Structures are given as C-alpha cells and as structure tokens.
Length: 346
Image (tube, rainbow, N blue to C red; front, side, top):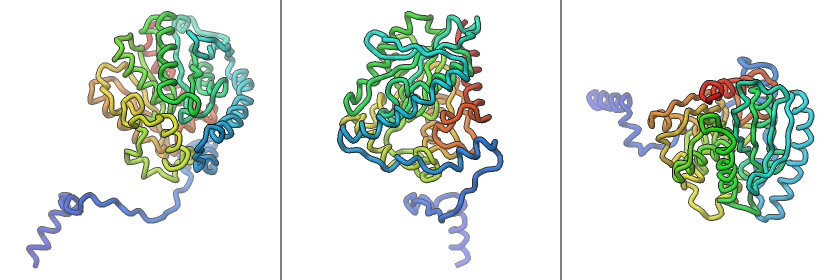
C-alpha cells in the first residue's frame, strides 16, 4: 500500500494524474474580486463600473441590429467635439476610392510626423460605431501621439457582412501606400480593429502588397471562436465584453455570414504571421481577450517578429478607450506612439 501511495504522489507531482483524468476542467469556487488599489483612482472607477448593459443583447433581425447600433453611435458622437478640442486635433470627412473615412490631424503636427500617416480601424464587434462615432481612438492617438490618422468608416453588418469591412480596409490601405512610403505608415485599432489590423497584414502579404512599418493591434479579436483561457477565466470579470455568449457571439455570426470563423481573415491567429512588421499589443488582466492578445504575441515571437506585449493591471477589454485621460490609459497611447515613432521612417 505504501508503494502504491508513493507512485500516486509521483504521478500527482508530474502531472500524470491530470493526464489520466482526461484534462478535466477546473471547478473554481465563487469568490469576490476586489477593485485593485494598485491603479489610479480614475482607473478604479472604470474597474468598478457595472457591466456593459448590452452584453446579453443578441439581435436576430436587421431592424433589431439598427435599433441597437444607431442610438449608441449618436451618443458616442456627441462627446467627440469636446475630445477633439481638448486634444487639439481636427477631423475632416474624406472619401478614399469610394470608402468613407476621417482624416484626424493635430493642430500642431510635429515636423518629424509630417510625412508619417497612421491608418486606424475602429472597434465595435464589427457592428458598432459607424461614421464619426468610430473615431474616438483615432482622436486619442492623434492628440496624444501627434500623428496624422486616417480612420476608416468601413461598411458593417447586418447590411454589409464579411468581406465588406476587409475590402474597404484594403481599399484604403492601397490608397495610403500612395500617400506615404510604406516605412512611414502604421496600422492600429482595438478589438475588432485589432483583429482587422492583423488580417490586413495577412491579406497584404497574400496580394503581394507593401506592408506597414509597424502595427498596433489593441486587444485584438484574433479568434472569433470561444478558444483561449481568458474566454473562461475572465468571463464575468471583464465589465466591457463580460462573456462570449450574447452580444459577442451574435456579432461574430452576423459578420461571418456563414463563413468559417477560423478562416484567418476572420480569426487571424490561424494565419501565417512570418514577415509581420514590428508589433505592439495591448491588453489588461481582466480582459476577456487577454488570451487572444497573448496568443498573437507568442505566435509573432515564434515567427521571429519583433513584438511587444503590454498588459495593464485590472483593465477590462479596451477600457483605455473609455477615458484616454486616466493615467494608465494615457500611458497606453503614449506607449503606442513611442513604438510608432521608433519604427516608422520620418
């Protein structure tokens, strides 16, 4: 009996018992997670905020999608004039080869950035923030980093499912290549915008197009399936996305429109990341997409790509876009701006 117990102990220590248990999921007891006192008061307020009220909403008709999206877009757009004024940037609607966009320009553009241009792909689960309402992140990076930013107002479902958004993004990328040298261009975006940033580079590689000098996918939706540890470990801890079921799952399906969610143009983590430009990735410890971000970082490093991963204490999904003036959130944009400044030609 003693010998058997010794063997069992060895198996437990070596992980053999877990393998024999067929990788049983871990049951975690219900517990309370306090707001960390290791972040600024501004960030504590964001962490303590209630759940995003639309996370359980899963529209099933085009009319229901518009009833959800349109009021949110109008509300988001109201805050932008004050944000532009505070960050000293201007915004001009433009049309790029038939695709709507906004050129965001700092009032005091530094000489070093006059020939540089950042292409922005907004977030919103492929369905939120049409028109000007999608420029909040572009305004923040333009104002804090003092870069010109071209923000793409790509077509979205339910009216225009995949691949309309990617087609629009690539149309703008082709045009951007005529506005500056590839080495002077960067691409960035958060969530959906982060996933599209990665997918744009994959598609540019496939089509033999020039690649940007650097990219900044923030907490990218790099896997549209419920794959990855933090889809489970951060469920109900992230107060922005909250969980995969509900709005997020519905958004994935309405965008994909029957296409395989593991297609690299939908979930770029499944693509070939060799040859990617230098990349900076951003996430937070409470982010439902933390694993999406970590997996991209590891795959880039395995492909020999220069990649930086910044993870912020207590931060939920894309929370840095909620208030760019909170110290940690401003730091996000400052880090991204420094990364672009380091890697883009002048």
